[in-house]
Length: 244
Image (cartoon, rainbow, N blue to C red):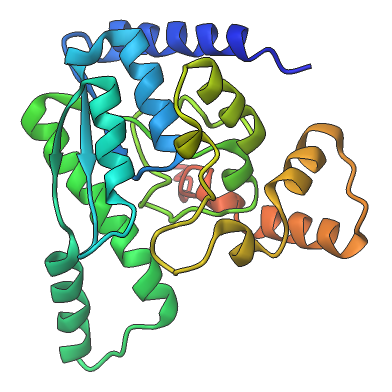
């Protein structure tokens, strides 16, 4: 049985240890989307480092309908933050590509904002002397539901080995409100929920990850295929081995 209290404590200790070894004097920079993952990540960092060493970055693209949840989260945690609207940057880049004679595909339109957001996080991190904290969880990573060099990037990843179900449990243990912990997961870019995009629920995926069981053979096959196709997002870039 998942012990949320123990895992929360272990994650806090791990984050503290990382900053002692590789980020002494630095702050944790977290992109705040208003979802459970970024909220739990930020809350864990606050427990590990104190609120004065955690910096939140809100990055709406134009009008974000749920931006108030992000603002609520930074208020609850009492952390310093800034709000950087990425709309002009994304639009300018896509327009420049279009002007070069190439029409951006749907994939480009969905992934580019995530990569602009990560660029923004590293720009802010350079200003505030920070380390960028990745907010992806095991369930998303398992099926490649992240953007390479976008939200999959970062300097440390506290939730990488926790499923969606487990992240929610840790969020409750941290005392985060239900409207954040139980918020329907969505990428904020495609207009669909994660589960609509994937074609199966996180409950089904999490059970398969932890227990190896899936009642629907078609869903099992899809999960296995996605996992295999997207492993490159979690691995180091292949390099030619020079043998003199």
